[in-house]
Amino acid sequence: MARHDILIRNGKVIDGTGKPPLGAEVAIRGDRIVDVGPNLGEADHVIDAKGKVVAPGFIDPHAHLELLLLLQPDSSEYVAQGITTAVNGNCGHSVTPYESKRVLEYHYRNGLISIDFRNKAGGRSWKDLSGYIQAVKDNGGTAINHATLLGHGTLRWSVMGGALDRPPTEEENKELERLVAEGMEQGAVGMSTGLAYIPSRYATTEEIVDLTRTVAKYNGVYASHIRYYLGIEEATREAIEIGRRSGARVQVSHLHMGEVGAYKAIDEARAAGQPVLADTIPQSTGHLVRGDRLIQFIMTMTPELFDVGVEGVLEAIKTLEGRKRIAQVEPFFSHDPNDVYIVNTGDEKVEARTVADVAAEKGLTPQDLMFDLLLERETGVTFWFGRNRKDTGTDFPPAEVIQYPWMGPGSDVLMVEQSDPTGWYELMRPGCIVHFFRQARARGVSVEEIIRRMTSMPAEHFRLQDRGVLKKGAFADVVVFDPDELYYPSRDEVDYRTSRHLVKGMDRVIVNGVIVLENDVQNDRRPGRMLRRG
Image 1 (cartoon, rainbow, N blue to C red):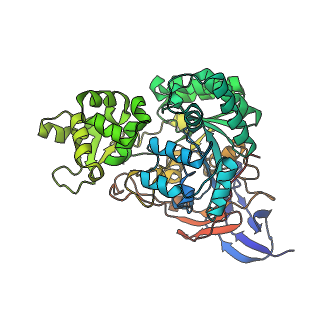
Image 2: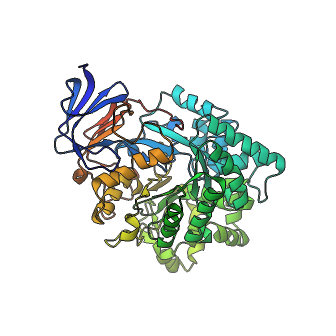
Image 3: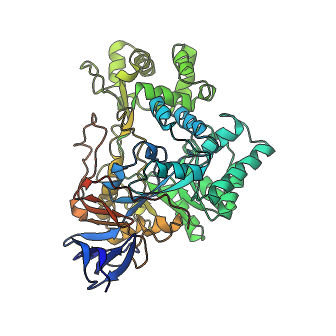
């Protein structure tokens, strides 16, 4: 019997298919699992997994790491959770097309990256998906695996020359179809839309269907941040309709678990034979947005300012007409001012108080207070939107929703820049896996079923070949952990001034046969790969 590189013994093997646990060993040689069974011999490195679960590495179907990989390839928030593969390019935001400088400019104008990050990342260049993949490799690789979606927003903005509220011309349509086909041929796993964002929100259902037909020809997935402004159930039905008419598999992105009607719509579509999945953010405490980044977001949601830039936003904020217009279109200003907190100010007079409270004290409207603070402080104020969300109590999520076997977690961790960690962040999403385990188990979902939804289910949907299962010949993406020992701070424990919290409790994380984490400590190895559709 040949000697193995790694042998995992004495653990409870949950293979990712939903089957009951096995009392077996897992043998790894090179980047593959060479066997799963009893008495598999000896190895250079033996892991004693007594009392722990051995499972496939988790797959996150909703990530935004595509640009972060160029400057922070460690992906620590993902590794700490046991995520060994992330699907990037969601919500219509893509690494293509054309020159990378244009892609970086799009991300900046959408508030996704800071101007400093845009300038630093500009040192790496590419012209298409293959070029981006090579740029990541040239940068030293990644800690985990990554698959990539093509982003409709970036494509439309680039081809049409801006955020234009009109249909593409015949020539522009041909170029969009060409670019989608090119990206799919170069390994993309599908196309995403951000239909609540500029410019994708200008696209009709028919426009999206036409492009998604090209995705379907290459056996790809249509993933959508849906048109929430239509109502979540109606917007979900649009995503289902796009999949039905185009023939593509559908992934409904970050679908709120409280929207029972939307989940019933998906279940009806699946009963009719349509391949539709949904991912959900298990728990959130809302966005924390520093003043200068909020100014960027205003630019992203205000059509007349999208192509003008930050200076145009600042000028608009100085006028009554500009303030009224911005408040109409930027959703951050529609939050209940009693649930928007002013933080990270260093000023005890306003710190951790609500916008409603401070505005009343100053004799201002809540919106005018926010605009005034933006002009006065910019980087010296952070607004915390949605701190007191009601969807985190003991009665959430609804038992009916958590039982759907086609729904799993998607972290949607924000693009937090390590060089600027407090510009834009969220406190709970880096604990996505822990929250989903807790919620699903509390509603009677078995550990093996929870793991299936985070492994073989997304692997099959996105056609990630030989991923998401523990079997002979599969790639050796493996996690070793005790579900009862996984820990992430609760809402009451988390410190809003600290933007970076990591899951604790992972014993081992193995990516392509290489250990990248042991006992919560990540090393500097980068065995991750850019995955192609299988």
